Image 1 (spheres, helix red, strand yellow):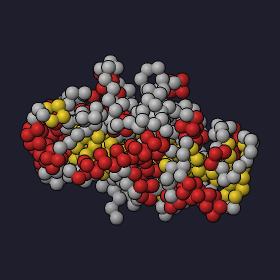
Image 2 (spheres, helix red, strand yellow; image 1 turned 90 degrees about the vertical axis):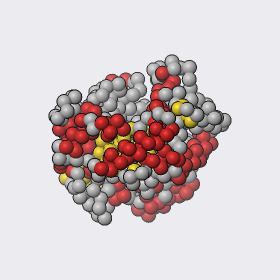
Image 3 (cartoon, helix red, strand yellow; image 1 turned 120 degrees about the horizontal axis):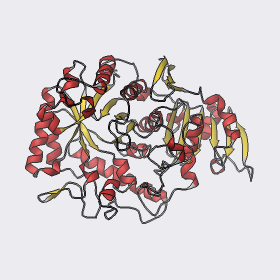
Image 4 (cartoon, one colour; image 1 turned 90 degrees about the horizontal axis):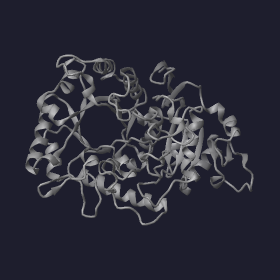
Length: 506
């Protein structure tokens, strides 16, 4: 089976039709791309014009032999999205999300090179109630992506969102898109998306740790059998480019070694400085990467990832939000549901996994927090880790040697699978008392032997005793280790500034 990684960058529909440098130069350099992520803003046109334009762009890309993903971002920034009698985002129930007519999706697929449709930063819009529209209206307009649960129970809201996501994804694919995907600014909802037919697509560098985002998205792809996409995003806060050319290059190389199926850079406008025949340092680094890795057979992809450390959690959308600036203290985009102690447990688990490099309370540089005052780093130490949701089965957990149980809910089927892996495979499990295999009374820390494995039971993951007992599983400080089927191992030595690495073994 061909397991080469597909390489691309994002562009805009008028770049394609006008042959602007950001689109033509990487291909003209002889390095090339396999696909592009093409932004469309159809609400600026009449319906007939939008349909015609979509077909023209598809055909122009097909003439260059390039596939494309149709990306839609306009709905995240504008409340007014109506052209003529058709509204491209606002729904009769007062919610606000992408609304594509079947004729338009059909036109995007005219030339047969449409990979699928993307709702840009979909998870961000859901958990922050279309925050960009709130900011643009100075707080006067708050629009949920989907109708919210009346209950304050996070499980009830999660179940409702599952149904909403499935209906939404099914509708877009029924109209002619082969697949549907989003883009994840924050390391949440990968599993919820994947479970409901939405391909996980993690942003790397940006304001997060790239390998932490990967570990979360990889678990979703493994658990639900989806491809894995990766956006190497040049934005940092409000600056573009906000990362160095070297950091961009190493994030692209990381995608290759991590088994990603499709990787692309946002945004390709940074590849030139306006001179129509010359790439700048970013463009040159992208061209270098394309020359080195495009079409290179690596012999594995994300389906072959065999993590050794796992986090099992109920994904309530918590990444550390809650500050005085913009990130509202709520879950699922529902003001009735607030983070709990259980919501934070997986952040603490990652702090252990990364040898203390990640924060105690948040993962991202977005939030105003003391731990995020330090300079951004793309990479943190991590020894073959992945995150699974509360419904993970025994098969997808079978490669684990160490596992953390976190969050407010884990299914009985998943807990039973974990118990069997402890007894049969020698799995070590770190768990709060509520998920312990039997009552241990009021003890705050205890280790239970169970068959070939053991349970470390503690309600404070940052207790020094936990770190002491799991140290043999955590790998080396300053290194990323990835393990794949067939005893394949990749080891990366992280640079001092955290922006790159050297390959120690592959």
